Amino acid sequence: MSISEESGTTGKDAVAFVVACILGYLVGKLLPAGPWAVYTSILVGYHLFLAWLVITAEHEVGFSLPIVSTIATHLACLGCVVAILLARRYIPFFRYFGMGVAGLAIFERGWLFVKTKPKETPAPAATPAVTSTAEDYQEWMRLLAQRKPSSMPPGTSMKAEYEKWLLARAQSHAAPSQD
Image 1: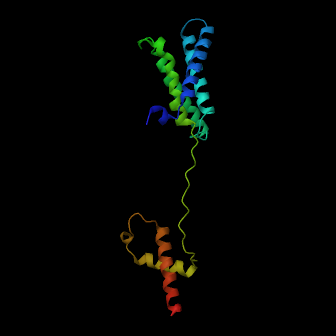
Image 2: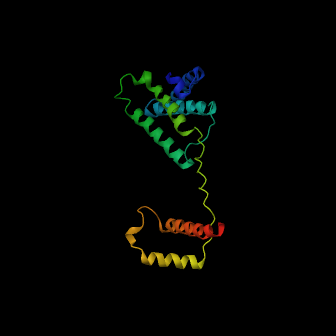
């Protein structure tokens, strides 16, 4: 499987990447020479390419995270881009390959803008409807008073133990009437 198949990009996306980079370059040329021209050109190219990827996505587009988390993660991605831009003096041939930073938009699109279905919670297990009476509760309290605290299985709650006991009691009372 090729990288383009894994990331969901096509030949049109490559053309859009080049166009976004050229447009970003042209916007950067409108500004006075300096670091802001470089930052602006790459950030414009990045956002244009990201917008293209989101608009033309073949999958259902939506936020994979809550909106605040999506914004925070997008800002973190931009922080990575800006960090690379700040290191441009130390990266050889950055002027030729600097717009390649906009390619990080592919990863951001796959991370933030792929709509995920909420996890379906399984339906609670059907528990038989057993009603409890005051007499049942008094009998349970007598049983607890006679029982050692260490006799309860570890990891079970008192409520679960009571429901289990109540079900067994209801079944034992129902058994003689079935004969």
